[in-house]
Image (cartoon, rainbow, N blue to C red):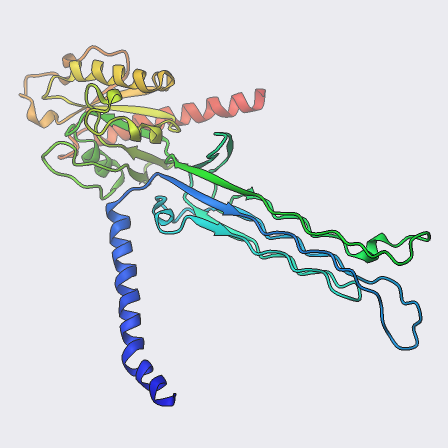
Length: 369
């Protein structure tokens, strides 16, 4: 036995550690490569502990009476917001979460121990649905916010609880109740102030990098961005900071499933301001019209959001061409070159003015309500 233990310690333990390390590394690589914004999980709360039927039996204490204790409550299941998480990838590997059952009551009116709760960490912006009924249970928007999704069962009462002057020796106790069990559907909507929308290869990710320093993938072919990117703009020249969401490019017919489809548009539904990013050298007027049509086909409410237009890649135009004359739009128009940094400061100042005004309006509406 001792020889086998030494063999396992010397030869097997390092192999086990290496295997675990490789598994963690592969999962970390997949987290960078895969953006999971939908998941389905099963949550099971703990059952309440049973109450106890017991009578006091002690020397020199005749007719001790009932002293059965109550059972402990079952553990509950909570979702907890965690700002360090960016996707729902973890739920691809672990989909069932079960809280601990409460312990039964004991003699001498001892209360059973409560079952341990389970806390499931989720990224901010997660919306929780009951998968059967479709009911919205809640959403996680703040770090550390807790949302109860499955309540533990109630512990049963012991026979000491049933003693009365008329019934001095009750031989009954309550069983603990079952905890809640349900299937949940989780959907992630990134929390951002500004949403970048545009056709593939219009330079959205380059623009995001120019204004926020984000490290999204950039290349000279369409559909470089295949998952949403989120960048924070923190500049000493600005009194406020804001988050910018860049989603994969949209093409005509996306609402019918063409290209990347409109699946990622949910990530700009929470934004305050939309930014249409158009390639100034590739028929911006036509792209502007098609973008509006695709957004309306997905959710007409998106067109009610304030928006501005950014004409990108002006470095590809001739010097005598005025970029603003290339498009007829009712929104504010900014001409920039995200690659060379032209017009970026003016764009950031324009976004700042919009966000300050929108936040002021929201504050005023809240005070009136």
